[in-house]
Length: 93
Image (cartoon, rainbow, N blue to C red; front, side, top):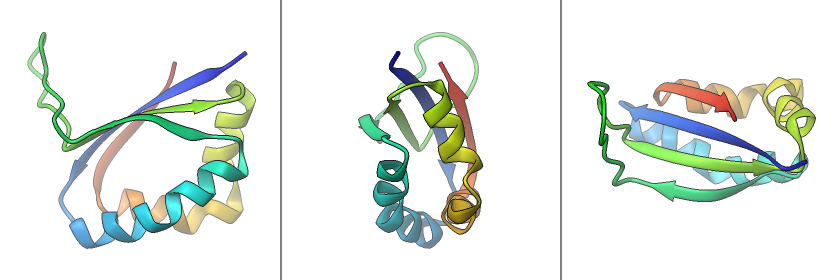
């Protein structure tokens, strides 16, 4: 069953984020993932949390594939680029 992940990014290091973006697509593909929606214009319509700099909905073939992507030791360097670009939260839906 298709799984989705919501990525909430607050970018403070654009250079690290740019390096991440160059490699993120191939990392996702390795586990059957792909971006479904990417927005730099998110708007909080309820609640007090600030809107993210970038919001992304990812799609994976299933929950196991999403977890394999985030836990893949071969992708640790790529995930570190995202983590070094600011703060991020990834929620498996």
